[in-house]
Amino acid sequence: MKADPAVQRRLLELADVDAELARVDHRRRTLPELAEIAEAEKSVQARKDAQVANETTLGDLDREVKRQEKEIDAVRAREDRDRALMAGGTVSPKQMTDLEHELTTLQRRQTTLEDDLLELMERREAVELDGQQAAAELSKAEETLTEAANRRDQALVDLETTWARRTADRERLAPTFPAPLTELYERVRKNKGIGAALLRARRCGACRIELDRSAIARIANTAADEVVTCEECDAIMVRTPESGL
Ligand SMILES: [Zn+2]
Image 1 (cartoon, helix red, strand yellow):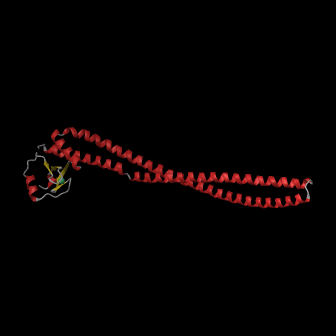
Image 2 (cartoon, rainbow, N blue to C red):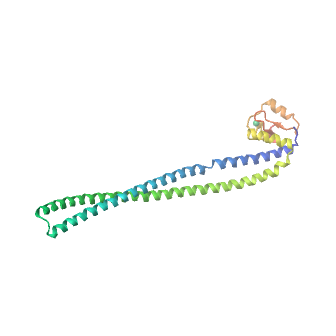
Image 3 (spheres, helix red, strand yellow):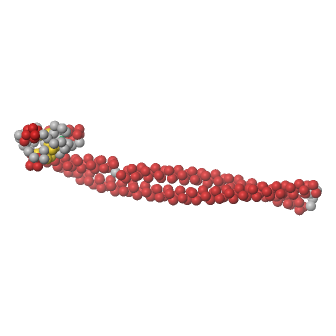
């Protein structure tokens, strides 16, 4: 295949543009922020789960407190009834003794219930504090997530700008090559990643392999408008005075 040496050299510009487009694409998919965001999302979810568990525990304790309070009220009501009976003067001495016994039992029961209630309230308070701490941790985790997402978005905006600029360069350059040369370039680029590179100091700029003496001699004897490709990586090797021929 033949192509004017100046056209061949312009292939290097296209190769530079394509290399940058590939870099941008790779960077877009491997931004460190993406891993940070995944980690932060996990952290937010774990803290939301912790908050739900905390609210469930609080709800259970609230129900238990209410039940305990109701039971204490019932015991007190019974005590009041017993006291009223004793004060009414209508009970027999035997009934009086029974009522006194019952009252003692009821008071003991009330003390136990009140102690239990106090313990419940203390537990509830501790769980509530845990909940407040969990809420603070959640909002901190959400902040971290938002911050990482903002950085990702900013990085993507920058990459998008470079992408748009280089795509415009490509659209300007691509139609300036003869179709067979474009075809060869695109085929090699698709298969090997790099379509054309400078032959510099006897090395293929695409795969970096150093050409042996006979290969160099062969290339040096090839007409300047002949398109030369690398035997190792198939890339079009563009010759310039830097090629070391
Ligand atoms: Zn090569």
